[in-house]
Image (cartoon, rainbow, N blue to C red; front, side, top):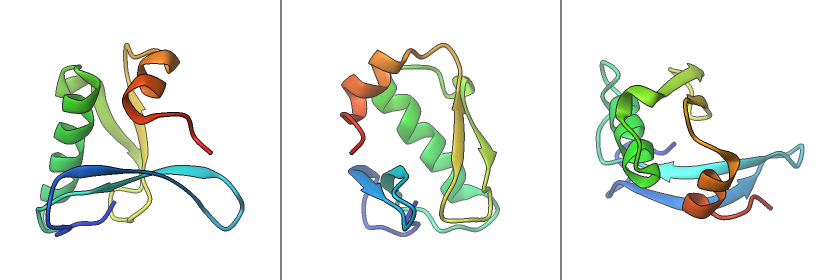
Amino acid sequence: MTPRGGRDAIDGWGKDSTGRPYLKARVTTAPSDGAANATLILLIAKVLGCPKSSVRIASGETSRVKTLQIADVEAADLTAAFGTPP
């Protein structure tokens, strides 16, 4: 996630140095007091059409790379919203 990224948006897929895919996202809020994390949760929930209570940060709250846990969403919903990972 890129805080203060100029807009709230999903920027597609990327790969880390080990070849693992990750979803690139940017939010307009600063990373203070969890504001950027809250905006990320709202963004993901909006794109998936699910309640924000279904999305939580499982790990990486203070890191740019985060693991999200999303309840009640199928793999097909993720693919439809974000495309197929590389």
